Amino acid sequence: MKKFILDLIVKENEHINEHYFVLKLTSNDKLPDMLPGQFVEIKVENSPTTFLRRPISVNFYDKELNELWLLIQIVGDGTRKLSEVQTGDTLNLILPLGNTFSIPKDKNARLLLIGGGVGFAPMLFLGAYLNDLGYNCEFLLGGRSEANMVQLNEFKRYGEVYTTTEDGSMGEKGYVTQHSLLQKKQFDMIYTCGPTPMMQAVASYAHKRNIACEVSLENMMACGFGTCLCCVTDTVDGNLCVCTEGPVFNITKLKWQI
Amino acid sequence: MKNPVMTASGTFGYGTEYSDFFDISRIGGIVVKGITLRNREGNAYPRMAETPSGMLNAVGLQNRGIDHFIKHIYPEIKNVNTNIFVNVNGSTVEEYIEVAEKVNDLDKIPGIELNISCPNVKEGGMAFGVSCPAAATVVREVRKVYSRELMVKLSPNVTSIAEIARVVEDEGADSISLINTLLGMAIDAESRKPMLSTVTGGLSGPAIKPVALRMVWQVAQEVKIPVVGMGGIMNARDAIEFFLAGASAVQIGTANFIDPTVSMKVLEGIEDYLNRHKFSSIYEIIGAMTI
Image (cartoon, chains in turn orange, purple):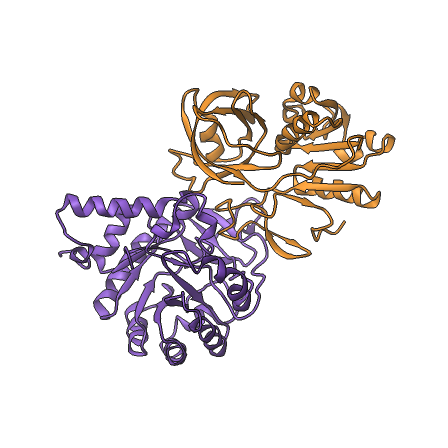
């Protein structure tokens, strides 16, 4: 897919809570097509300690509304500065970057989308996309506590939502892989994005039951389009760039000890 | 060269990665990602850390080797209408020679950049660029087998950059490029662990520009061959400073990651500067700093 460098307009900066916000961006021109799993690289202005762009997963893309959503967690100076943008501001983005999830041929495939923390972001777009294509999907979303459980109403539009929190403040207490759903139901395909230990636990669950599984990695990167070679992950084909060969990988390709 | 703005090795892939963003044939020269004799997987992740006004990297020359380049990449880029330089690396003098010999057979490659300054490999690399006898040997031996433009990329991690430059010129280099990255490190205070898998890495970006400028100035005074300046150039003004210090051309590196079109902006900005100051050519500002 052709990559673009675009100045997009902030339509809305929706603060969910003190940790998360959603930037809703648009343009006077038609936004380029984007696929679930893909990401953008945002330039952060007026933050002296933020030298590089910030890679952010596409949270939602509405072709008709010409709108792109980015769910962002405030983790440092760069994301804090981004959290301060106002409606009408412009942001410079490089997009779309990276690959996408694979879609099963069987429309009746039982699909489970597992998100953890800010890893919810691509799962919403993937769920919406799968829905558009006529697939049913279910979401298993987990976080440290209730404050991490964002966009649940959006998720509910596209499928059944199951929740876990480590402190038990919402849904079942524990990790996503401990949720009773996984004991009760069978799935044909699992997609996941979240902290690496969580994705590894999910990958291990899938691997042991012979369930196809794709994970979306979020390694640190300098460029986002395959030239700095900083974001590599170790695969059966050697070190591959997460930005161009990923961020989505089938677990059979990764050298995870699962 | 059609203009004095080049892109630096390791920051511009093989050029084609940028062709979505602009017409890469407008660049004066492209130095492709460092190439070694054999496939190298590079260092383990994490390989990058953002630092104040810059970044550390420890990629470790990941590449598929010269034969892969010749077979798969060269055919894709050989007709791009600009000067494509191959950045040549080795663990031993013999490896440098073998890669240079193979590149010598490529008609559409007008020159090589001999990298004796990579700080991220265990063997070779920077070891050749921090001692005068080692630098002399590798330049002399490669000169014997390589007939086109031989540019040698120097390491800033030395006591006297002018001495290394002198040796490199004496052994037959056609030009000198500098600086490669400065050896540095970063620690995550919370986890008490290094930020890079290799602990140390190469620092680039605006943080190193004053060091680069100083070294370009010292080298330009020492040698007669052209000097290609780089190190933290983010815009045309930065580039102008390198010309004033004595560089005949510049390379844009880390800035490509942040703005993929930066080299075109630098090029246009240089033209504006020349017009504004009524210079008829870039040659009038090379080494034109007045003290």
